[in-house]
Figure 1 (cartoon, rainbow, N blue to C red):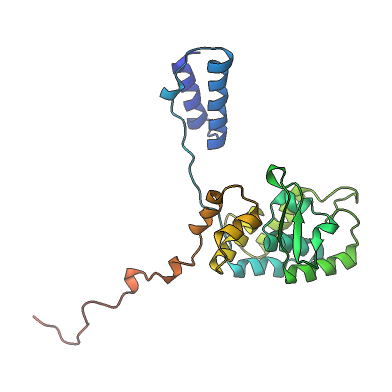
Figure 2 (tube, rainbow, N blue to C red):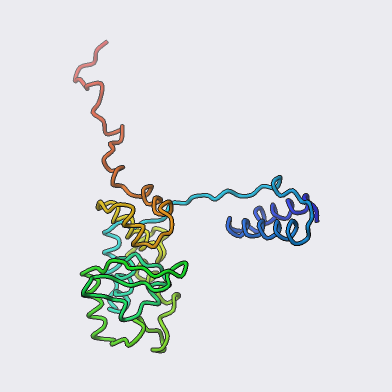
Length: 245
């Protein structure tokens, strides 16, 4: 295939297959490597459109919506899972792979082992979440994994955690396109709105670059809430009871 056929195929992926942006970029990169590096062919990929990264703002829940999620979740294990995920800003896999010693109640910290990028880090431990975890522990007595799966020697599956969130979301009548990862976004946004600086939020989330953390500036209402809509400005022309000609 030459340049025209490659262009035609990539267009087919977008127009007919409706693939995601990431799939398109992966295919583009694979074809470029195949032709230019492996086959040593002089296909000019610079002339073939490559999708730019489109920045999408994360979905964020209001604090009342988060509280409602916890309120409608009666199973203490499920509530503990949702609470620790939100209150410590954890990823799905990080919640699933928590171990009992990772909860450091003396220092009020949560240890996240081998998070994204194979890095360990610490996050904060909520007082409210800790109390729920203690209630859960007294009832279930987990030995190694904090949240055990069907077999005690294995952690709870990520799909099970997602299902727990989906059920809670339906019960709370939340219509936003939220996923479990939305709790992590909400954690960061709520901290920012409460006055926590971006650097500390970056450390808690385990972001390698501060640029990744700055996205929460676009969803936080800390600064925007102080701006008054022009529709709410005092009227320029005072209303009078009499018509003037």
